[in-house]
Amino acid sequence: MTDITHQEMLQKYAEAIVKVGLNIRAGQRLIITLAANRGVPIQFAPLVREVSKAAYAVGAKYVDVIWGDEEMLRLRAQHAPHDSFDEYSTWQVDAIVKMIENGDALLSISGANPDLFGGLDPEIVGMIQKTHLKNFARVSERVTTNAVNWCVVAAAGEAWAKKVFPDLPAIEAQEKLWKAIFETARIAQPDPIAAWQTHIANLRKRAQYLQARQYTALHYSAPGTDFTLGLPNGHLWISAQSMAQNGVAFTANMPTEEVFTLPDRNRADGVVTSTFPLSYGGTLIEDFQVTFENGRVVKVTAQKGESALQKLVDTDEGSHRLGEVALVPASSPIAQRGHLFYNTLFDENASCHIAIGRAYRFTLTGGEELTDDEFVSAGGNVSLNHVDFMIGSPQMDIDGVKQDGSREPVMRQGEWAFDA
Image 1: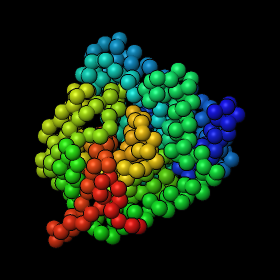
Image 2: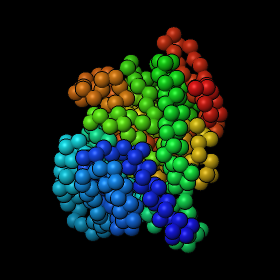
Image 3: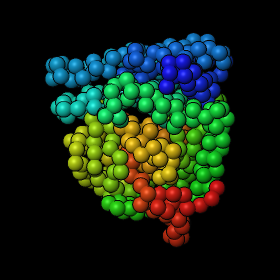
């Protein structure tokens, strides 16, 4: 990929982010940060600048960026006093919340080093992560209610690229990862925006079919997985595009291949086995199993990163339960690439997945208007966390369980078992 071609692709990517992902309205402001609020590394500046140009072109009145250096987090974990990990600077959170309350748009860029905290004391990493989650909850709560148009996209970070393509020199790895991002986000197609409109329409048909079936539960069967997950009354199947409370239709993830809904926090039973590693808080968790009883995680095991997984589950009571269930065919464009991304934005779109922790209020009819207690009573989950992990494979079968207890196929051998 030449510099000119790469620049042109960045411009097309930025246009799709602004017009499809965020759908920025004239007069809105936009704030850009790194996913997990670490601040955008300077290496992502070319994308940020193109997004800014595209946002101003559609009438945005102000674009702001929170810059940062994620390596500062590792330095803190290594060298800061052990009694200091409850310290947190809230000015960034204050700024984001203020813009959300003003009805402005939020863009998060994913591309962090998946091994940022590799080899460090999991106790310290857990404390840092929990402190962040507590302080960032004011933003997370507003995102889960779709208060404004928000979107998560990716940029090919250097360390991330080397993780995905370890056999390539750093520059080549980064170029190859950028190419993968452009292809999976439909930017390499002749008309990316038209391609996205078609894709959004197709996913919407899947969600409408599942909504009409009104299943009370899903049953999963695959090697290492035998799992039944309840669906509460009033659950809503959601696909790529959503409507924000500020009246803007937006696409929260680019790429996206999923349809998803609300699981019942009290009805999850059985064992699930991961099919992809989970990058959480700078630690890579691999080859793990999670056992549920009556909706609650009762046991976790992992070949690598088990202590980090346990710390995740122990964050709060809500982290022992589920907040999202998503269906993705095993033949999705991301799965067909044949390699891991070590990044949930991508890997979750290669596989059916479930999420530990906080539920999205908009996946329950009227959920945005409920108090926490009311939401929990309706089957929703409240937590500091929301962490997706992947359980789907070409060997997975999923049945929809109807009100009368009968079952019908939803997925067979990892593929949709119905036409929509």
